[in-house]
Length: 396
Image (tube, rainbow, N blue to C red; front, side):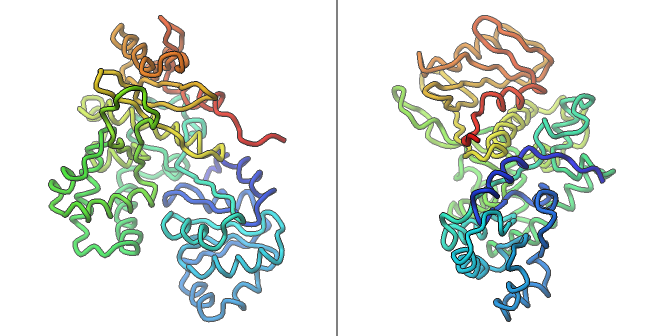
């Protein structure tokens, strides 16, 4: 199996120089354990999903942890909630940086435990599936092929049929994570909810409509949406928070964090079907959004990503602050840059006036140039451009 160099690695090493505990969250199968073992090969790795290890920990916490005085990697740490308070006592006695690494695929359990017991002692990082800069064969990959396959590492390092892999992934996710987090009487209803969410990727979130179509209450829909967020399957992009006149939209936009998973849930099984699918534009926008998140998280930063839409017809698919300016981004999946695309790019930053930087137009073709005040960036270059503009929050 090919080992991929992950962009998060330097951030993990940096955190290990400052914090006694490092937490690494992210969706299942994003490569958390592989990365932790590669960065900290000298540390023993213990999976708390192993029933025998968890039983030992619960029956004799002191005896269990006595094996790891010099440090360890605890995989799926949220499965033993008492771990966090025990580690608090251990690191308060010895604050040596980089001592314990905690990984987990459920933000609810992992981050709540960290915030309650390890505040100020833990550096928090997040590993999503591969960014485009990490995909080994990007140069020979078509855009539709990438959108269809998605970015989970196993699909790029092992000879696995993506359709088989996603079917297994969803079955495992629903059986393990969903049952652990919420009491779902009928898992088929939750799967219907998940598929309906996939059909809304790139759209404003309307929980009432989603609940009604699924046949569940608004409260249940809200709880299930929180589960999908905590599992890093979806991300809710908020509207920009500063008031440039009256804002029309207050709802967030819903995005899947992996286009391959969204395509599978939508029943898209090949590139020809994707090329003609009415949601192809939304799926491409979903991919761009996830790329932006990956660049931020890999640098150890919070997301701080937004969109803008007002009642004057001004819209920016993506907005982020750069110093005291705003970077507006327009997203178009077409391969040919048309005048309409350029006009959309020009309009993207008008809501911010003089506060806006040169707008970006991320496209599904091969074009990279400056045209009529719009910076045209192709899909292969987007993550690199964003990485160049994203400032590291740490100076050596």
